[in-house]
Image (cartoon, rainbow, N blue to C red; front, side, top):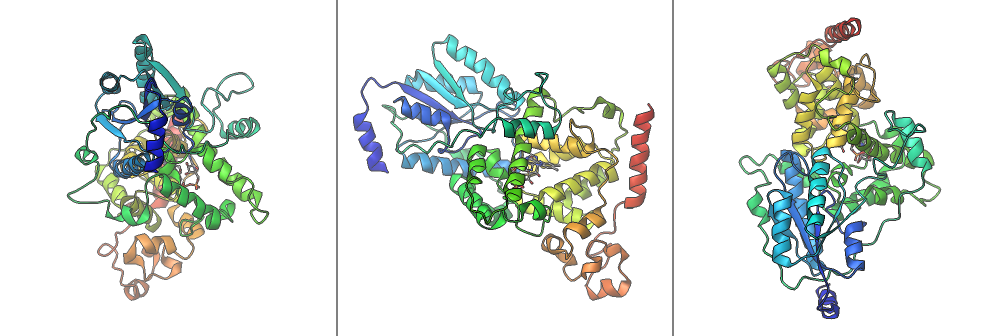
Length: 492
Ligand code: FAD
């Protein structure tokens, strides 16, 4: 590879212009429209990643995703090295970082792939205008989602609020573009500018290293994303439609953290499910694509309602009588609620930075409707602890569960943590993995140890209130209280 890069260098005319390729939420070299265009047009390329201040650019970075970002940047850096290039790291506001680098390299152009979160859009808009005014060529490209939020419109020309017509419009608007292959080499600038050291960014936890459990679970970076996709197609996709709700089984792709930082493009994921042999049921891969499109739909909502993470879409919920209960919130965060499926989910989140989708819905419902705690507390906790934390999917999903969102579950759909556990984790495989103190409980009581006779608890080595908590609320009573609070809203 290095040889190829040198050959490329010898072919570069002295007059070739230099371009800054700004990586953001697209930490990959395959299917990267900005990168491919820069190579096609013969630029010398300086790849750049900027660690922007909190709340600017890529948005607030949670601690779990910071761990991921560290490893993802390492992987991107290795891919670029192999192409004869070197990733330049800078921190600070994007306009200052870019203008410094333009001065240092003499770059005449900046290319990037577009991002769609409100803080990113506002940074990019101002920056683009400033750079153009300074005589720098700026070109931006699509690729973070399947269809850009302004592209799909309702029959009346507005934006969508309901998922099914959105899916129909997206599915009916043709296939996303075919993925673009990775370049074989990147023409280098005449001089490499200085880079900050990734290790100085302190993205990894140290004392304590709470991310130990992440290491065996994940391989951040483009290779890890491709492997995850190949494994899923080989063994998880068959049965996806019916089995994707069972957290103890391996029928989901776990691609979300790779998609969140753009290590794989959604178009590549979409196209990987084309042309599969007859042994794959179309029900499975179409359902998988439909889930992928929820991600696009969430971005569509966020684009048209930038306050999605902080304000109720349905303002009726502004009057909801949320409870201030820090002790209950802490028990939920730590997975100490006394409801095994909730505790398993919250501990999976803490140990691995991920939680199965079905369980996300159950724990979110529990926080909002059993504990009557504001959904924004949950959104914040997930943002800090999920490796796939995503400004659109996280906010849209929390509002979906709360009932306050655009196309939301009705408030009265209150998940019962016992029957949900019994239905979707019937033998308790998931609970036993993450709540080991209940490992020896018989299936019959694995989701309701509080109903087990004393002898059964004793036999399983469980002492309620000592080795495993008593339930922090009574679900039946909590349900009634939630409905009363909701009815109060309706009559106001
Ligand atoms: P798969 O079932 O394999 O689906 C493939 C891809 O489709 C996913 O990787 C994801 O990109 C997309 N997808 C699937 N379901 C959804 C969905 N409901 N909404 C949006 N996209 C979806 N997803 C995030 O990526 N980031 C978040 O911060 C996030 N927060 C959530 C919070 C709550 C309360 C809930 C209920 C859901 C949240 N989700 C979030 C959506 C969903 O749970 C995850 O995308 C999914 O569990 C990821 O696992 P997977 O890759 O195995 O999914």
